[in-house]
Image 1 (cartoon, each protein chain N blue to C red):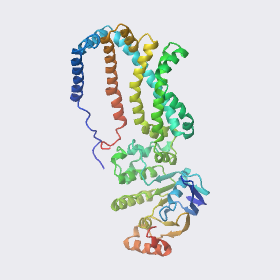
Image 2: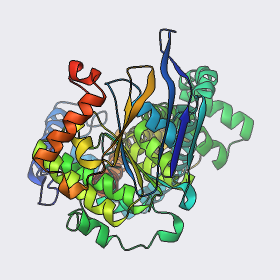
Image 3: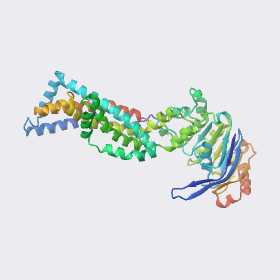
Length: 259
Length: 242
């Protein structure tokens, strides 16, 4: 028996993270010394554009639009993918029937889905967000299906013997068990989704980071392209550190530190 | 009270072979009676428990549990606690809606769990986790208590302490209790009556009643009871297991 509260292994010290990022910027700066500044601008030039675009309100506006699309597509993909994945994981017959569908959708190129969505639904927000979600849903299904398959049957028997309600089975057994699978699907999902959102914006929207990158591609402004990329990556890093990781630590606090 | 009348039960294994698990098993457990179900390893004791629990449905015969709502409290071989819920949440979640706010303190106190309510199962020793499983079984105020070898793989002093705790809690809340065990000493110490099964496929070999009050079952009395039991069910002496 352990009498002290669960202690977690210390997280990577902030100084290490800072040193690591500084090292990356140094490598970038050193590499840029030997390149044409128009083709591969150094961190200074990119940061200057970043500051200028932020001050003018351009970057926050486009970043905000893209983020909204990411959040909408992510929410849709996780909700729909989880529901289908859990259903297939718990129903062998349904899984056998639908498995080829899942494999099919898993292998449809993102670009095809996007183009078809724009043709069938039109050049609008619904088509853009829907196309991104459809690209991600099969991955969520596969991850959550594995999770649902591995549910501990002995705990489900406890639920039966003690006549737990369906809602209790869902919230007290199924979802806590699936938590690491949902976390994994979210992690890989958020990074995949924001990349696809940029393609969707490039092909059929008139705002967002993807639209801006398309614009600066035509202007051959590499510094601006990198500035927008950097801005978005920074936001996603903040989401990871300040939202995803704390959520996960909370959800797994029952796990003994030594396990 | 529990009434079990089982006929044949066949289990089909993965290779397609049919294995007869049960032949004919009939016994009852009255309210307030503690019965141990014993027999050779693999004879189908746990299967009978699973039938009573409704976890096996493909069998011939009938099982009936009388009493308030026919509620069953169960302690499995493994504690089977939800690792992501605290000790108290694990116990509270099985309570019927009417008893959600019930004060669990007396039960936790009786089992020596009063300071462990906020712990997660991963922080408990096996002995403590078993106590939580026992608390969960009693918390539903069952009309039948089922125990499937709840004290295996514990060191003997811990098992002994847990048996004493179980008896204390049970005598405060007497219900019909049926415990599967292959530990004869344990059965002789706890039971009012021992139901003995044969080798697989299980049939009923007989009953062994122990009229002696539990507090009078000291080492000498237990040795004496063991002799009587082995005289009544001689085959067990040869195999050395019950």
